[in-house]
Length: 219
Length: 231
Figure (tube, chains in turn yellow, orange):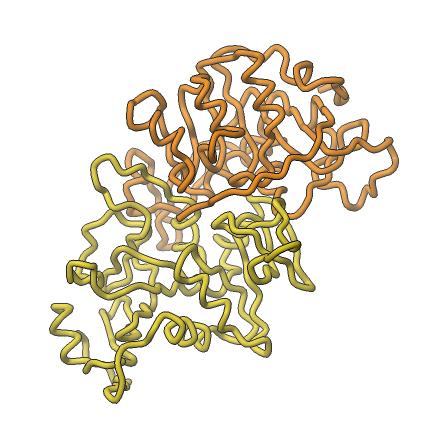
């Protein structure tokens, strides 16, 4: 752990964040007016916690800006899905475009933030989120590698430990990389942690002290 | 290339496709998937195909049906593994189909380059990852890039919403996805549409794929499948 001048805020009077509280913490950190891509799975929940006054525009890599909430009932249209192939809706001001344009806006640095899930993140911001490397696993990368190097800021939402208790924030990723030095911040139920060239720095913790968590993580 | 031909049947639209062809197949999951052209290709019988598409089939329709029929030698795609991609999964595990995984942005841009007459190009996606293996790396202004090659094909299969009789295309919502890029990157672009309008009735300002890229058009009934999607 590097020493930073920014002190860690420890919330010791409560337990870890639940999934909705975590999504709300991520949503609150998204700058007003940002263009944002939310990855498949846990990051999708962030959309439920964005406030209208933030003026955030959601991008989906299958060719849309101004994506609205999940479609229900009669709103379901097979021609309108998000990147997870879930039927969604469009908001006023939406725009459609083809795949090369969609990834050009991503890789061209026009997307402010993307929020991704991960298997592992290194303390210097390497990301592993596309392949476990297990024998027989079918590799599937989708847009993860393009998002990782394209968005100006890459946030990761993940648990800090595997089901068997192994840290997922590590010195060096052992899973195949998605991108090098691309993640700037990890959001987990126990802590928000900045990562990057200067190493990991805990911004906030919930239900645990920074020192205890650092010890459990082996950092 | 001469003007687009309006075909009377799907079988006419897919006639003449040779064994060993490379076929670009539009769609993202099932949105924009050219189901009727694929069914026609299964009837037509071409085999030993290389298919370039974002996914590797859902359920047993569309691309999954073509795979199940044993016509595909190789799949080039970004995201084969989905909850309902069991047809591909089985063929991959038994070694009956070859897989090349390409990051989604590279898949689109490599086809765009082919269609635009651009040669190999440098791109930062996948630097430092297993997908960089064997690729030339160069550093420009302190940032590393990989050399990526264009993807061209013999045929493109696309599903569009409307066309006119000369082949201008309009798409609908996120079913647009790879269609406009694939249309440019194939020697012969074959399009199924839900509606063919008289020439002059499409607003020229809203045409997405201009007719120059389109070779054959065939009208089909809309199909509405739901998809289980990625996990």
